[in-house]
Length: 209
Image 1 (tube, rainbow, N blue to C red):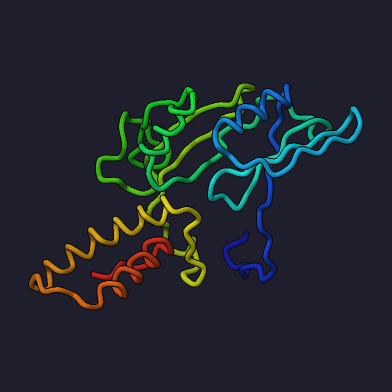
Image 2 (cartoon, rainbow, N blue to C red):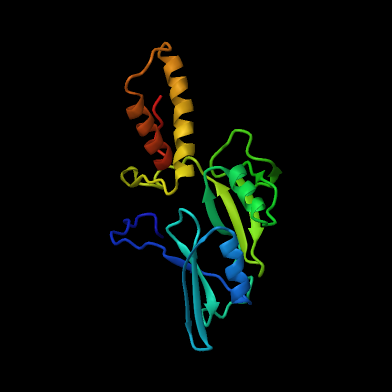
């Protein structure tokens, strides 16, 4: 039973995930081609090598190499990459030569896939898949608003300019509806309203109206 346990008080930040590959240089070329940042390539003799890449805006990296894992190459599946615009993310993958799936969505956990982005843009519901040359599988998931309790509002962060721009666009559209509801008058406090909207959206708390 874990329902009554208290949350931990010591930060434990996921730093890196090891993925198994057969050809280190081939994998290195693939992930470099995605535009991911190469952080390290350390070689120790003939038995150990570790390569580290970090996806844009990600606090967690991947490791692959020699002497890191006994797992079979290609056995890492359903590695999640969170994006704020699923269609733009897929377009960039394709432009970089990646064989990515079409965008698809699900109407709920465990539901069958349906072609296209979720018609209402529901967060957590739209996806794209692709694999590296070894068959390690990646899943892009569009998240624009977190479920309640998933993010502390005090820790609101935007890790890239496209992510921030997308959040600003959503806040601007929502503020336009807010001004309509308040009689169409110019809101001189729009920066405060939009900032509150962006923080609430990311933290999964009630959105301002």
